[in-house]
Image 1 (spheres, rainbow, N blue to C red):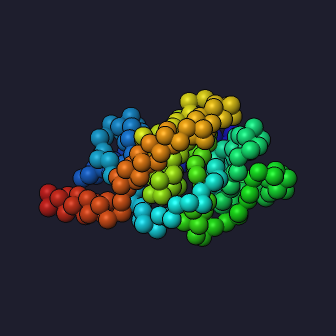
Image 2 (cartoon, rainbow, N blue to C red):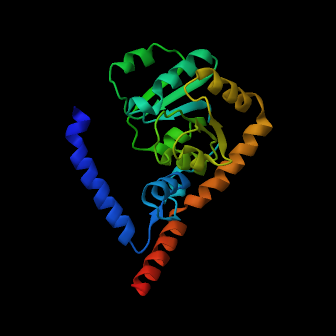
Length: 235
């Protein structure tokens, strides 16, 4: 019934979006996943321009990284349940959670786990990445591409993420993608490769830093400005 009630509104929004995409002088998508949706839904081919990230704000001095981190599980689809199951299976590893929880009652469950630290909301993410050895992004829904991946990459932190939405586009060679992302064991197997193989970790860390440069805010702003000027000149 709820879908039937909402349908006229959804249909109107789709018509508006279709007109906007058809009449637009230029269309920009932030990654290939978003571009594919624009292509498949509206038949339009966008330029890809990554989200701008101030990389230097997240660079820290190396030496104290030890935790496997999850950032801001404010929604149940962010994969907190999977993250906690992974932590249970890797009791010798330190795990860190930064940000809001989708259910406040989960804090007591987290506090009972000796190898998991919950920081709560953090305004200084650089301090979180300074403690982070590996970032996990176990999302179960098609988000466009979490910025936290690029923030971590700026500090040379590899990421392991779900094979869904724009997450693989963001990770590139700077980490690994889990196809069977609802299976904790699949994550554990990949994490063990990072914790046991220093050469593999270092290679992914270097790739992560290289991948982050694609999102450098100064380069992105310059490119966006160029696109705007060209579009205005042609109008």
